[in-house]
Length: 194
Image (cartoon, rainbow, N blue to C red; front, side):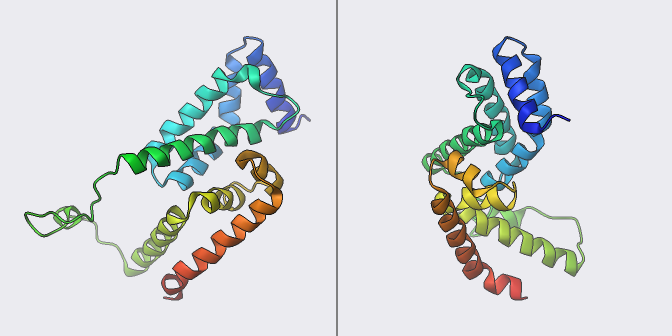
């Protein structure tokens, strides 16, 4: 039985040789996990879908530079992580209007003007609030600790692989994950005690 790493290397060799269909195999094997990583990293499904496509475009464009001695997934997530950083820089330069932003004319928020016609049971609402609080807390973490945490906790990657993706040492990854968890504990203590 061929391992996933061996299959990835084989597909990249085929892709380098001009067999463009090999990209479809790579996308089928890694697309969904990559998309979920990007959703967690960006907190926005549309942005995640865009960057998932862009990541595979970059794989195709850079296929000749792939070193078959390295793991494909490490290379793939390095490309995706760089795109996430670029997207955050873009968001900083081009802020979007929040539903919670106050309208100067009416004094209310846009969210207050939008009517939610669903009636949710209290337990479901509380669960959704907790999930949303965790998402917001992870999204608010500084980038240098957020990405290692997501790659470790949600993608199940080893710290050595994360270090390769983020161009830092394994010890730095360990420290960043520890700092992320500490910050999350502090921020979420009140929310999760309910």
